[in-house]
Length: 100
Image 1 (cartoon, rainbow, N blue to C red):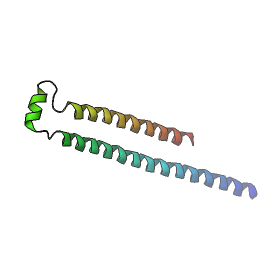
Image 2 (cartoon, rainbow, N blue to C red; image 1 turned 180 degrees about the vertical axis):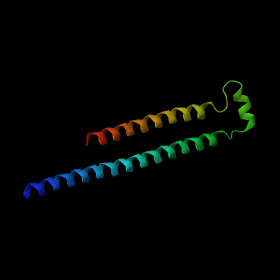
Image 3 (cartoon, helix red, strand yellow; image 1 turned 45 degrees about the horizontal axis):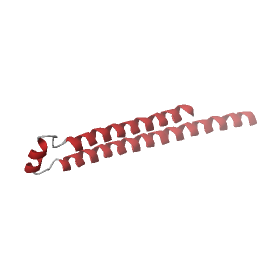
């Protein structure tokens, strides 16, 4: 009877650990996805804020450099960095999930 109780306790403990890992993984996926979407929204809104340059400045500078060069370049680089950080975080979560 003691071996059966011990085996049943071990199975319940294993299922509890798996449920905990799955719950934490889903929470982490959700948090990272929301953070990624929020960072992209902030980048897009900041780029839109840079595009309201007076026409006389845009015309004079536009002869040499396009008016939206800096914010677009910054947005592209920030989006790539955000995506790389997101992918790295997801890989860490997948590795942790597979290890347990």
